[in-house]
Length: 626
Image (cartoon, rainbow, N blue to C red; front, side, top):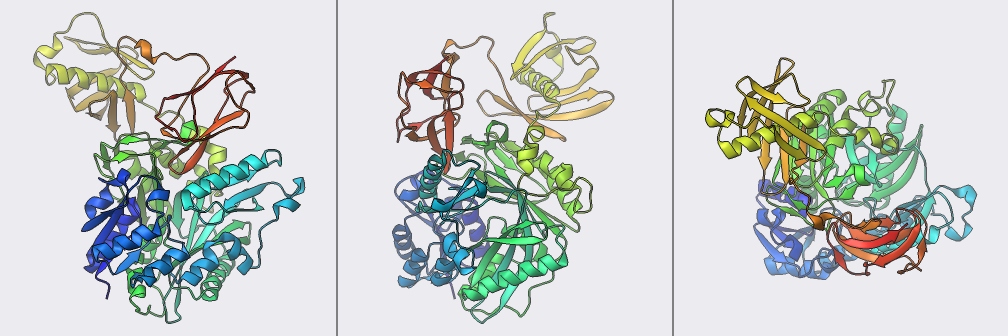
């Protein structure tokens, strides 16, 4: 029997595994980098071991340090989570070689499938030889052999510049997975990303736990996943299940694994087998009523699975909450989370109020999962929960998730006229999904009234006795001008709005006969968070006068996020001429590379970016003079 488990991972998945271990009566050990010293997964573990350093290459990718940590902490088993070393056969061997139990598949199965090139060869689908590629083969997909999650992946639509894309993919793959090997395969436009969950024991039993659809993706990283995959014919579903079982048996698989396909029409194209637990495993758990982590532990202890899995019930949908700005090229965000509260659905998170989001790791904050009897009910439940959530801190993709779940291409379902589920969803619909949230001006008025209440006490008494000149407050693009007179509230642009009550943290306004409540929160900075029953707003309060230090020279390129300068384009130096859109340099943040390009044609008059240098958000990188 396993008595103590070290989780060789961080964040949400480490917390997830710890939760099951507590239920099973197993003690837990966390490992942490210097950047994660105060992280939630460290606080939730029974004990923890420091891995000196901050980057993944120094810490979570150091299998030797993790094995030493397990032995030092007295653990007798290691769970790899997902990402990092979860599909590393050498790490699995090092764990078992140290006398520890590996809660995962055999190293031989990992070797057969963790490398996407070897997996394709095993399935009779060798990758393309880049030397033989022509324009007729386009579009192509460059893909990391040793990892996933969209890192180390590039779409090639023209052969010109393919060398730069290869280099970028290799650099990103090396940083994320410790292996810069990439390969090339055809890129299928308009396909659906469908996967099959398998679970196998050491006694010859293989479970197929249905299908999942993971087609809603940005940058090849999944955003919304669901089980079962909607709209598949019984014949195609049977084919997917058969192929998944074949892959598991071909590798003498044990534990949880996922076989992934790209579905175009009625045809399934094998992508890869992930020899680990998937991020989206909760939707399968919800539909089948199982705990996949508990089953992983029992299989590692040598137990046999029952002959057949439980029958599926209902539909489940998962949305990944990221600290990112979808309207700004999905730029990752950093900062302190002041509040993260979401009711009525399952929430798996690696963060809590007061935690800081740094630059070293993936920007996923949490996964929200809704389960209901039907797909439509699950989507409605999840959208409403996200809409009402209290998420205060860096910008997130919360509004995008709500709109995605309600968009006709997703919400109409397989029989709906507008249904169109494929990996191009965000390419088609991003502009409409990232429009500003309605009601911002009314939220700004509520913020201004709450601010006045905080300075003058609750609504009533002397707070009504204000000068005849209007009170003026600016939040972002919204200027609020109002008076509080003996006749009540008079607000420019809101002639029909009546003030019902105002306190420092709560305001009630009546508009068109409907009373709406606004909850207002501040945490010491310039940002004010206003939550309502129909959405939330993060408003930046502006000072009355502009600070001259905020002014920057025309053509200045500022870091859109904190990160590390990984390289500067060849031939780019001060004094050179650049073309509009020409790549100048690349930043690495949260395991993804972000290209910084010239905003217009001109002369590069300043270049402050140096490879290897850490920069903060807003740092001046370069100046392009028209």
